[in-house]
Structures are given as C-alpha cells and as structure tokens.
Length: 59
Image (cartoon, rainbow, N blue to C red; front, side, top):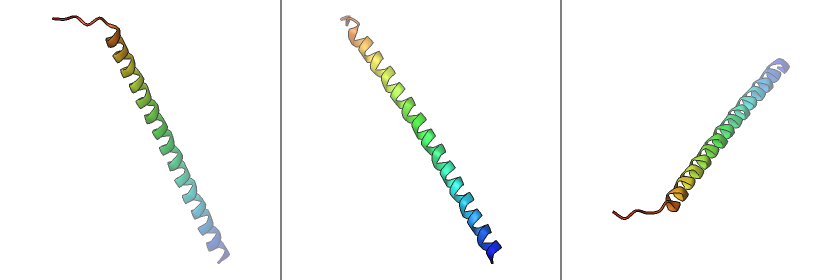
C-alpha cells in the first residue's frame, strides 16, 4: 500500500510538473505574441507618422 501511495504521489508530481511546464510555455508564447503585436503597432505608427509628414500632393 505504501508503494502504491508513493507511486501515486510521484505521478501527481509528474502531472503537476507537466502542467507547470505547459503553463510556462504558454506564458512564453503569449509574451512573444504580445511583443510581436507591439512591434507591429510601432511599425504602423511610424509609417503613419512618415505619411503625415510627407507633403500631400493635390492631383
């Protein structure tokens, strides 16, 4: 019974570790996505500013 309990405990620990690893990976992915989005927004903002600075030519 003791062995079974210990085995169950190690299984639980393994499951917990797996879950934490998954959570960490998701967090990293989310952070990377957020960073990419921020970069994209920054690029768009710069392009808009460049367009705004350029004199508008009337056809």
